[in-house]
Length: 225
Length: 119
Image: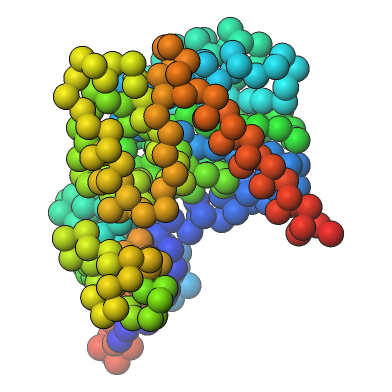
């Protein structure tokens, strides 16, 4: 005897993520979820981002790792509230972890919440954290075919950032091919190439964040009016 | 790698549903997995087996329906499956289409023991 259930496997995570999304909307928080392979430059990009933001800006960072609080210590130097989420083996962040650490951090909007996921191109893409956008990073020391190998995350990400652009002269990496591959999976994905080390292109990333923040604010205003 | 977590979420759902039906045994759980869901079927089978071994769900079967990516053409509304990453509409050739399938990660049904089988 078959009984139809029709439930999302991750419905509990989705429920918590919906609560987070609601909280972000009410408090006017822009939450962005950064996802990449280990070593693609998420933490370095965040350092560059925090360094560029005016002191006193309302910004908080949650950074996920399987072990160590090295990243939080690196990021805390910029004077913004940072909290390390040590997953203890879990290969992704889920909505419950974000909720708990956000509460412990005591961060309230309006503002910007940057979430650095555990370095992994597979599992983090399945877990909604209530974010306004997922951003996928791909460094030039990886392969151009990564979007084809990991279509799930490139399909879900709004923006693809090509990192370590300054290394292009030293590696055989074709940025056009990488973008072409990403757009085979997700034709509308936005694209920025940058180098956190030299700072080239970082202004585009900051403008992208700014534009998204404004869009989210307008949407929130439209909903509440 | 997160198939253990996925399998355990499936089992939590089955356990909750089973609790609501104390007189029937759940024989199988049917799930839909999309090709963009980042879940590997073999790894999920393995995780499911590992998590159910020597538990009340030892004999529970996992039935997986694999769902390919499907798109709907924004020009002519044709719905089509995607092969070899070809997102252009097979009918009118337009390049703009919306994803309508392939991200599934759903529990679709439970197979329950026939009530009369017990008596």
